[in-house]
Amino acid sequence: MPHRMHHLVRKKEFLCSQIEGQHLLVSSASVGSSLSRPALWLLPIFAGLVLVCAVALATGNLLSIGFDFEKNYNEGWNVYNAQRLIDHELVYDENYWRVNNYPILSFIVVAGVNLLVHDLLLSGRLIALVSFVAVGILAAVTTRRLGGDRVDALFGGACALGFCYSIAPAWVGVDDPQTLSEAMMLGGLVSYLSGRRDRLSLSRTALLVVLGGFVKHNVVAIPLAITLDIAFRSPRRLLFWLGCCAVTFVCCLMLTDLVAGGTFIDHLMSPRSFTWYRARYHLMKYLRFGEFPLAVMLFYPRGLISRAVLGTYGGISIFSATIFSGFEGASYNMFQDAAVFLAIAAAVTLHELRKHMIAGASAHSRLAKAALIAVPLLLAQPVLARSPESLLKIYHLGDMLEIDRRAAQSFSTEASYISAMRGPAICESLLLCYRAGQPFMLDPFNSRQYILAGRIDQNVLIQRIAAKEFAVVQLRADICDSQEAGPCHIRHRRVELERFSDDILHAIDHYYHVAWRAQDGTFYAPK
Image (cartoon, rainbow, N blue to C red):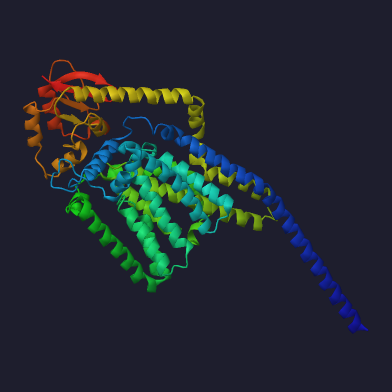
């Protein structure tokens, strides 16, 4: 009898524990459901809103693609070099007054598209537009490959577009290979993450990242991150991977030598002055830009730790951008790769936090709900903070287009002015000289770097200026602080005048006078 009573008590305890466990499961499921139900429709709407805001940020740049005026210095430089390739000139020659320190592939792509468009500037801008869209799509696909769901992918792609624009607005929708290289590198990362990492997959990945490097050689984070990941995860595949990269690299070198000349490496290693102040300035600017998403990632680093290739990509992209941005002529656009990493990492972090909060929300459901609202806002803050201004500009879209039309008209008038002078010209706006039909004989920025490095003699150019060989010289601003009588004090606004040495500017001021001031600067004619 006592034994039977003991058995009944044990059975009752077992049934109670089962009921209690079922109750806890139901309770946890109901909390998870209550948390996930709003997320099912709120998070997709929010991700779509971030995408709208990101597109709104870039709308001005994208709508101005068809207008003929210079957006940055590189546009004219890229157009001239693409034209030289089309004309079968020796692109990497020994004339260091017009150095080409970019790999050849971007010029080949522009020349190919130009067969249909028949305008090198527009061809380059259209490639940049397609590349910009591709960056957003590939960032979304990368997020999926790293474990995110569709909402995370939409969020990551939207952030990639918004972050890329915010980091480097002057490089979005312009004739410059930076965005094309970024898109190709992301394609390589998607290839690496999507396969079994067999020989076919590694060959395809190597092809994409090496070709991306031959578009723009400073986008190095993804190839290095993949190499390190293979070294740790699949060391037996490392030799094959390096061999694929080496073979593709040699093939690209042979193509470069075949179509553009044999001094490519010498041009690629062109001298640049470097300052740690400039590197530190751009790094701090990036950290201020991404302070909110970076803070969330530091608070909950599980997404980066569990995905080593993503964390390595982020560390290398930030470090390399910091170093490259310290060189004169480089700018905040060096952090475009780091901006894409930040977007993908933000999407992965959102995915991990959402899973963690829903799974452990039974005790703190209100806190979890608040976090699910706050975290996406913090991660997307760099885009959302800039959206009101961009939406206001779209509201005044007619005024924005009118400004572009006036800029294009002024640019055309200035090009006609240079063309009417009937003689060689020096232009700080290379695109202006190109539109005026001037030959490419001087790259002001790179030639100044060679002068500073002692590789070329500035007196050669000064003698030509003294002989008044040039019919017109176009500069971004007046040379002197004051046009009154007295010695000329060079303006020290290096952003505007970093492309000529002070001795050359003094020579222009001595032998030339201000003939005209227009939208794109000051035009000097011989005295």
